[in-house]
Length: 347
Image 1 (cartoon, one colour):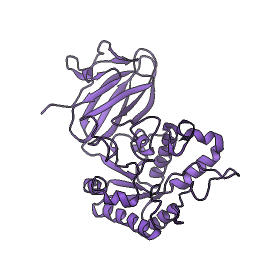
Image 2: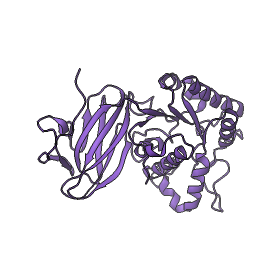
Image 3: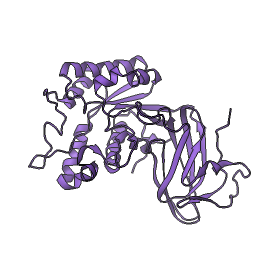
Image 4: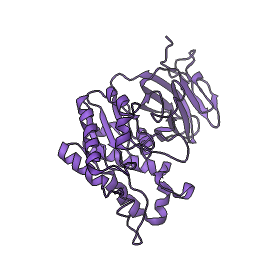
């Protein structure tokens, strides 16, 4: 079996391509290392699993480097390194097939990373199997999923950049899913549930596509998801849906479309809150959080959070919006003591 631990070997600086510079003292010269990286991308032939990635950033000039991977997941926010200095950062990444949406294409085998930022400089990289990683599983719809194409982005796609080594995101959100379809599709809940290990978190945000689901069924489906997580020893967390950007004339969000009340009069956030209280499940009230943010920005400025200008879409978020909403989720994970403060990145 091919060894897939890649040592920190030689310094490189990234512009539009990777260009090697001499190895520095203390580096393990003579091994292939950064030969796995070229043209701003790195590929590691590893089997599905969870991996710790350690990157060393910096070069002769001041730099600012970010890392993304797999299906457009943000894994490390832009990180500055002063001229001539090195900065080390680590994160944990989930590698799976399909690598993005569970009902989507398989993607590329192995681990693919992309090196970006306003002035990227990668000085070294190491990939090793994660031995004690805790997973955060995401069960959701298109507002959460790893969106395959720009300019779309789900908040789950941006969440990994806020987590340090030892906690990874396994995003099993899928476009177009309701509580009914997620439970019924064998590629979704029946696939996710056996993967849950004791201590793993499972965040559930399903509502946008429950347009014809009556209240009793919606409640029962949330309860079934909660029970399934607990049976595996995991920690369920119910998440109310992000708002849609539909304003009233007074600058507040519409009580129906924007706040996820369906045509049957089912108030999805209210039912989710009720189930969380009745089942003693932690609740992240993302409806309330995103409502406050969107209304504070107002009609014009809030357009940047969604794809209003790009696609006349007031439901799906831009990278900017998804990143902001992922930050709200991160804050709630810490506030509710679901993830230790030391395991998240702030700012």
